[in-house]
Image (tube, rainbow, N blue to C red; front, side, top):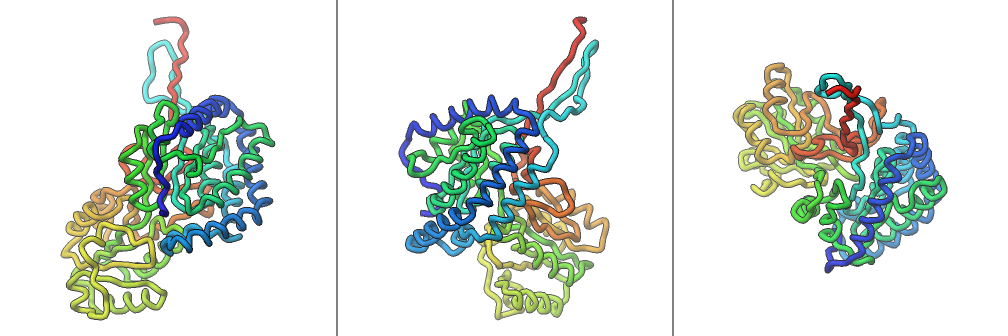
Length: 422
C-alpha cells in the first residue's frame, strides 16, 4: 500500500498533537534570529547525515519494489545526493530570509482615539501529510520553524525509513540550538495513528497540508475537522490560440515538465484552436515525441493522426504526473475557458497568444489560482532571483490560494492601541 496507512483509532495521535501544541506556544515567542539559527542547524544536520539518509532510502526502495509499488511513486521516493543537496540549499535560503513573523502592517480600519495595526503571527500547529517525497518533510520543517509553527509529519509507509532518518537529524539539530522539545514530530505508521486520528485533532491542529496523489488529498479533505490547505499536481492546461507561436507552445510544454521529481505545474492537456494548421500540429507532435513524451488526442485529432493514442473521457479531468500530453481541438477561446474551468486542476493554466484582448479574457475567465500568458508555469521551490521558498501550489479558493510560501503559514493579528478615551 503506497498511500498513508489508515489503522484503527489510537491515542498516540492525541498525545502527539498535544505535545505539538505545547511546543507551538513556546516557539511562537522565539526571536527571528533564533529560528533562523535553527533552520541553518537543520541544513547542517541533513548534510552531515547524507549517508545515513541514503542508506535508509535504499531500504525503502528495496521494500517498495518487493511490494510492487508503482514506478511513479518509486521515482518520488528515490533520494539522490543531488535531491538532498537541493533540500540543504532550500533550508539555507530559508535561514537567510528575513523574519516573516510580527511584521507590522496597516490595518484595514482605524478606530477613533486609537491606533490600529496588524501583525503576521504563527498559525500554531501544522500537520503535513505526504506520500513519498522524503525530502519534503525537511522542507516543511524549515518553513514551519521559520514561521514559528510546530509541525507534525505523517508520511507513507513506503518512505518510513527515509522519513525517520531525516526527522532524527532534524530533531537533533533543533535540540542542539535550544528549540522547544518536539516542535517537529514524525507520526509513523508503526505508532498506529491513522490519518483520521490526526486530522480530527482540531483543538490542537490549526492547518493540515496533504501532498501527493489526488486520492490522498481527497481522503484528508473528507476526514479532517481542522482546516485543510489542499495542494495540487499536474493536469494543467494550455490553450493554443490561432495567433500563438508553435515554438512557444513547444517550449512551454517541455519546460513545464522540468520540475522533477514532482511535476507540480506540468502542462498535461493542450486545447488547440481548430484553425491551427495540421502541419503545425504534426511538427509539435514529432518534436515532443523526440523528447520522450507520449502523445494522446481527442477523436478528431486521432482521426487525423492515426498513430496517436485516444484520450478517453476520464483523462481530461485527471493528472498523468508523467511525460504525457493530451490534445483537443476547440472552436474558440470561450470554448477553451469553459473546458478548462470544468476539467483543469485549477492551480496553473496557460495561454499562448499574440492578442492582448485574448490574454485578458483568459486571465479573468479561467478559474485557476494562477494564469500564465506566454510564460512557462514551471514550478521551483527556490526560484532564482527571488527571496522566497515555495512548498507547493494550492488550487482551492479558501485559505491562501496559490503558491504555498512562508506567508501562507501565518495568520493576521489586529492590535488596537488606545489612549483611554472611548
